[in-house]
Image (cartoon, rainbow, N blue to C red):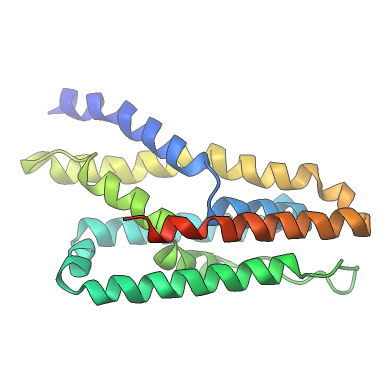
Length: 201
């Protein structure tokens, strides 16, 4: 039993790390937040992603993913919500004006970031894969599933802080109006470019 779980652990870690370090809605929003608000003010956003992913992961393991098979229309509703929100965030980022000391706006909060996971296609794809391809059958299902939740949370942290750090690296340049405008346009454009992920499969 222990040997089966231990042999599965490296695969979970590698999959979780690779699938979440690549560009996606969460990472692009973290980079934007890191650039505009810094590491400390982005931490509630990070915690929100963590909480949202754990709840979504557990829900999928408990069978919520099967609901989409029974009522496919619900999947279409989630797809439209995801696309609409990503377009909204992309436009908001691309058109945001240079902030001053009295008008810096607010970073994404814990509840908002947690809620976003439910319409984030990359979160669904990653966690459904973890809940199926990276679990063991029979009496080892829940031990392997719970191990997957824990290892996923640990393995994805480096990528999370890498994207925030990428944002922080350009933060000092945001005082230049031209760079600020180009940075926001690029971040908004990249967020829009993640839309095709919603319609895959």
